[in-house]
View 1 (spheres, one colour):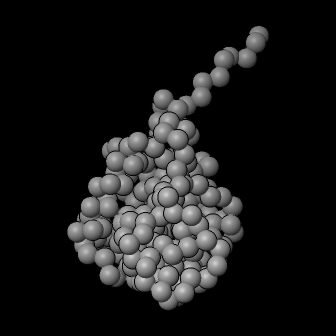
View 2 (cartoon, rainbow, N blue to C red):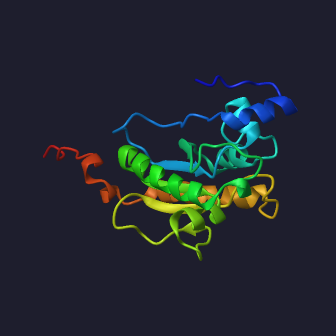
Length: 191
């Protein structure tokens, strides 16, 4: 198991991180699960430190904080790279298959994927834009968020936080019948 570090990784640490993965952050199967955040893949900085979205310029954690919530985290692809563009289309598509299994097991109400370009490739929706995606007959609602990486500089922190807040609002107001087996049925009030 990778133990997260709190010191700044050296160039050698970053290079050594190419062979590491970061564990998912997930509730136990069957626990109520509102949103699963899915990054594209860990950066070398994240792999070196053991923390998702760890590079100091990444706006994921500040946007999550400003939006008012935080839940499960995973990635489409476990292999760390310096940039998401280093990933092959086949890796992204295989990641979508793995993600489908994870979603079936944990059943989040919303799957929030950070990175529209990776989403387009992984899920075969070449014209997708950020925001809620068309409903799926099975599984959770899918919401594509802007990639919070500092390399995605045309998205400012306040705009990313606003996009994250929209997902939080959707999770807070989502129809309770999405997964009927999880709906809490209260006894009738006494007469």
